Image: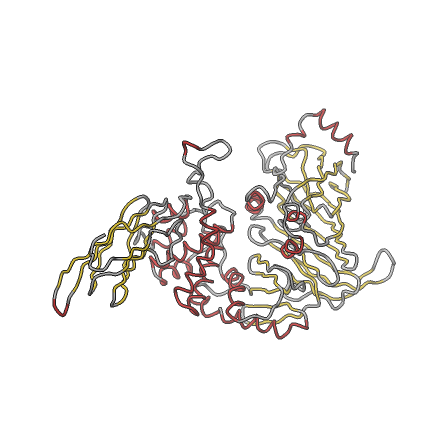
Length: 590
């Protein structure tokens, strides 16, 4: 029962407590939705039930339910009895429209802490292309729509959930894209709260849908059940196609689906949903995915489910990955490019983790490993360093404590650690480097063995992966994880402090002992490669360079050095201007 907003607000003001409304008080433990899609009219109509739990320490009488602003609330009931609720337009960038349609619901009695309540809900409206949240920040509309491509229409129907189109109810405080990472941090916190929530949606497409297929994450392997159903509006029959979308956790995968005249192409550990006109291109994607299998087989356990490619029929849409599903236009391209695009979804089909940095970092690391097979180590390092400029900016610290202000406080070592960040630059960029550095320090066999032993359910401590890698304390990695994972200490900054060479053996077996002193001016330590170049070739030695300290590397070479380089690009650094030193001719000491 909807109440007059002005009267209701006055009542709430008099009551005095509504202004402390906690939009994160409740967790939806179970979604049970029936979704009807009419592509011709762009309409989505939703009915169903929500089971909510009071996760606060106080009884709660009011709760909020939010959906996209293009959808309208029709009713909220408890045990088939309509409840009083207030409709509210709520500005927030968790939806592509930049606004939410919010229902502030009053329960008959306050729900105690940990108490559960199941509500009947009805809402609906249209879903059309909308990139308001980006265009109001000044982004060109056509460019913005390549990212916010969600819509219901006959030529193109594809919808993602929270963070794109809020097509299932949530409850979150207002956040803005202009406010740093607040949108991503808020969504990340919501996912953590809903890690054990169950999601069931029965999706039905009506009106001329007999040739269509509904494909999405965690859906049945078949496209859908084709048939006819009674139309209550006309009393006749209407064609429909339906499918069930089921998720047992909302921590990683975002409920999403697409509708088209799909054909399913199956290969070992990969499935491609594509339209008939793109059969040959779909085969190219399947072949590219198959080309990743040897590498994946070396690094990860066998897949527990196939990776899924779902074609977006809008050729301008940007690809989107959620877990082991990737939504993407099918474009002709070379195998190398396609294999990189598909690798993250294929990794997710074989390996999952409750820690985003492990999941995202491993996906990027294995992309780099695949580049290494085709283009060598330098090609792989070039790929990893594509993130470096953004990573350096993300790791920039504010002014020193003496000049820090309340509005720009000094960065704490606990800020934006890999354990708590939602920043994709850190999760994928820094996380990818972390796995690459671990590989360089420990070797392939140790890292592969640890990944094979990893169990998501056992990862209840931040040090779980560290323990697997240390293999019974055979190697102490506490310093590394403390600098790179548990705390945010920034990046290293290496400088060649001195180079000294002296002969130790004359004659035909001439040898020189080279001593290189390097300084790490950055906040994070690293085991860094030091490359010593001579006219006869190059030698490399690895050295542990703690933060804000000097370290010494010594090696024997057949002749005097000509150049010393600290770091081959395998370690992300904040500044590399002093990491190369050209040794002058006839001068053995810097």
